[in-house]
Length: 258
Image 1 (cartoon, helix red, strand yellow):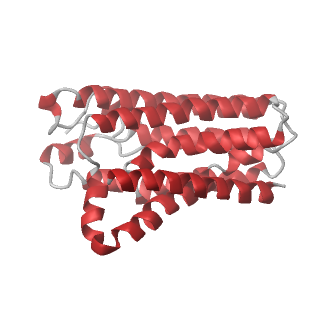
Image 2: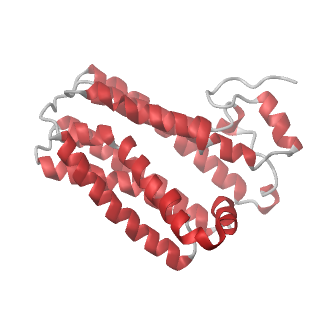
């Protein structure tokens, strides 16, 4: 059953990402992919919930969690994008890809993101398509981990947004608040949330296979797209180099004194 539902979810996400690509191409702004990220998980959550139709406690808990996270994240990115220029990553890629920009944007941004979305959303399908819906201590433990991650992501995003609203801060580095203890509180929170979801998946049959979700996301944010791309933007910035020496890269910890 899970294989069948994942194939159907893949077709759904394929159509969804095609629609987002058309909108992005029309506007010549690929950052629509970032806004679509959280909403894509909500789409899978409600598709699988309604497909099974049992509406058990674990399913309702997880779907509510995904809804809260997905709407908050997409709304945050949408509002953030209103007040700044186009994302520099996409701008550089459009220039570098030249005459192949249409095909490479479609494949390397939208289709690749759709594939990653599907892999990370795997535990959602496992839970929502299962008949095991009673809540146990695994669920409580996982929910508390998820809630802690949501706190870090929300506070980190909010503090950065408030900091950048002040024009004089545009060329400065945020080193206060939660950013004093980790250089990437939002990424730390994101990873923590998906490990929390993994624990909620464990009581479900074959729930252990859902470990592919947090491992994939953790690897991407730590070594591929998240932290490496963000820190590359600040290469050569003296203030950021000092900040790096004082502040933990990922896990929150007390800053070092220089």
